[in-house]
Amino acid sequence: MKALILSAGLGTRLRQLTETTPKSLLPINGKPLLSYHLESLYKYGVRDILINTHYLHKQINEFVKNNRDRFNGLTIQIAFEKELLGSAGTLKKNAPFFKGEDDFLVVYGDNLTNINYGKLIAAHKEKNGIATIASYVEEHPEGKGIISFNENGKILKFIEKPRSNKIISKYANAGIYVLNSRIFKYLNSIDKTPLDFGHDIFPYLLVKNEEMYVYKMDEILLDIGTPESYNDAQGISI
View 1: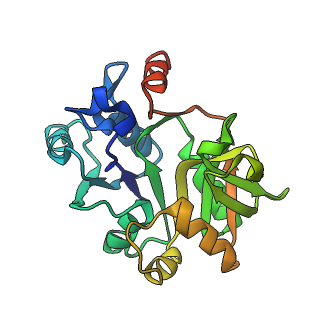
View 2: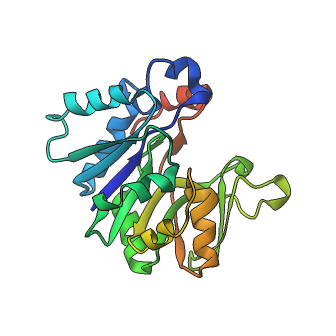
C-alpha cells in the first residue's frame, strides 16, 4: 500500500519554533515528527510514500536524503508545491503516484499518533466504502471537522469547524484516511485551488451518496499545532 504524508503547512501557530524548522521536522522527545510517521507506516507494510512540501522544503529534502539508510526499504518521493494546493489538491495533483492502487493512505503530518494502521486498513476493506476516516472524541469540536454516523459507522454528516449551534457530534476527523481510487473521479470534477478534504471533498461525497465510514480510534492522537500541544507531546512515549 502507498501513502501520502501531508507536510506542506506553514506552522503559523508555532511560529517561534517554526521560524527555521518546518513543523514536520520539529523534535518530539529528540526525534523529528516525520520520523514517527515513516517508521509507523513502514511497520504496517507501507513501502511507497509521497511527502508534499512547501515551507522550508529544502530541509525536508535534506532530511530524506540524509536518512535513506535509516529508512531502508522505503521508497520516498517529494512533491514540492510552489503554491499550496490544499490537502485534496495535493492528492489530485499527484494522482499518477497512486496509479494501480485500489486503496491508499493519507496522513496529516502534523499529528503525533500510534494508530494501528493494520486495523484501520482492515476496517476499510471490510466496509468497502470510498473513504474511511479515523476519528476520536474531541472536547472542543468547534475547531475540528466533525462527523456524525450511524450504528454501523456509516458517515451521515461531515461539518468542518462548525459553529457552536451546529455541533452534531464530538467525534472529530483525526486527519488519517484510507481512500479508494474512485475518489479521483470526484477530485477531477472540481476546479478549485486550494482543494480541501474537510471543506470540499467529504461533504461533496455525501451529496453524491458515496459511502464513507469512521474508524473510532482508541490510540494516541495529538495535533502538534500549538506551543501547548507541542510541549505536551514531549511527555508522550510512542
